[in-house]
Figure 1 (cartoon, rainbow, N blue to C red):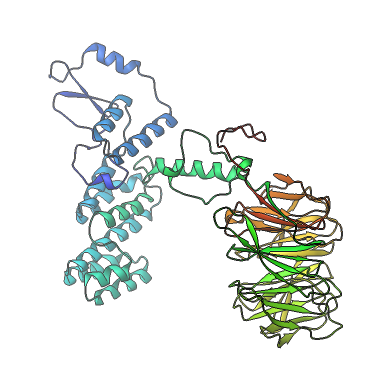
Figure 2 (cartoon, rainbow, N blue to C red):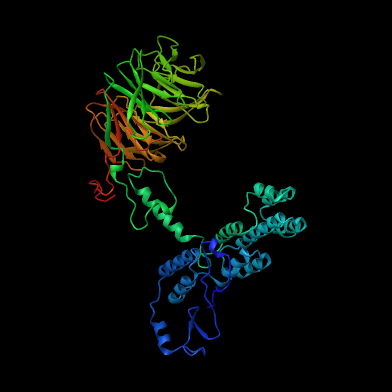
Length: 583
């Protein structure tokens, strides 16, 4: 086995991948591809040295892999002598000799030598097409560097005489030819989205080239960091209570302990009980920016609460009165400037309030026979749709003027899709259909076997969360039109209960229940991870703060709104009784 040629000086510290730096000498003997120094300098190893080499434990493949990973990482830290010793003592080789030579030539911009190295590497590759792709990447870098140096004729020769004859990726060649028109180096780097000649762009080039080489020849770049990051992400994914922003940096976690989040960090504890309503509270909804909470009650009022950004305590900001039938549904405008309030089934009116001033901008009623029980804002904030179970389905402007209508649709709940054209509506036929007000077409999207009492849609528009009569909470994929999951535990009869997505990345689902509890699930788990008690009657609605993932509110027929948050005076060293782990 050959020495890997590592004593050559190169710019490898920027790569986080490297050769092992083995040195060679006339007075040494090679064992397992490594040099063993001799006592007398005449190239003959002593018997004890040879015996000790033979007695060395034969490493398994996984052990060799780990040593190579460690060596690559140490080399990236500049600990080259340590790497040399590690490779010598273990009898491993960090990478193939030809790969080391190839890496050095790429980093030094020796393009002809690098192309010759490719021919040596050809026999080590699994894919016969890999050589062409790698050569294309090399020549592309060579071409761009010539252009940056102002060597237009040389660049043109590379384009016509070397890149084009490869007959590979002609679309890219056309793009590259356009760079000949760049007037200066900055223009070239901007249009090509390229770092320019030097170590950075050559490091990126090597990262791409390494993907075509087997790992036995050359390790993928930063392989140990990649594996550690994957392990951390997997632990986070499996953590039922992880509710903080994902940080891909390994510096943000300890690699010495498994990742675990305590239930005490989760919004499972009552922080506040709001008792200002004097009758059943039917709905609650945080504003899109998370700074306010709106609650609607049978007592004919809407209360706007201000969320303190530091303490997360809620304080009464404004009371909106005059909803004679009570308030069973609320919708914030996309910019949170307006709030629309709807009533129960026998209510034919809709109120559009200016949140800042507390003034009623519009009180809309098309007909006294209407039932306007649900509403949804168009993403442009200039229109909204409303409807009810008596067959009304309207699109209106902010002054309540009727823009469009759809006859005969008995609406239970509404949602405007992000395209600004399509409206999702659940109806009395146990389905959700998509209605396009521009071309007046409609199509079936979800079909259930029982009445859909309410639904909401995730921020990305992909998932819908349904509260289904006698069945509970169902998760649907709107794009594939399939039922993804049925969540267990909740008691759902024929009352209208509103559930929600919540937490960072909307990984969690929360719903009220007729058994007086709030249920929380991780989105991928059918069993609840928390059952919150405190309400004394049916919990009608749950809303998760979109800006503060540890804050949630629930509205109940007991006349209260409960605000939920992490455990007070959280001690991160306290044993969590639920999972028995310290945090």
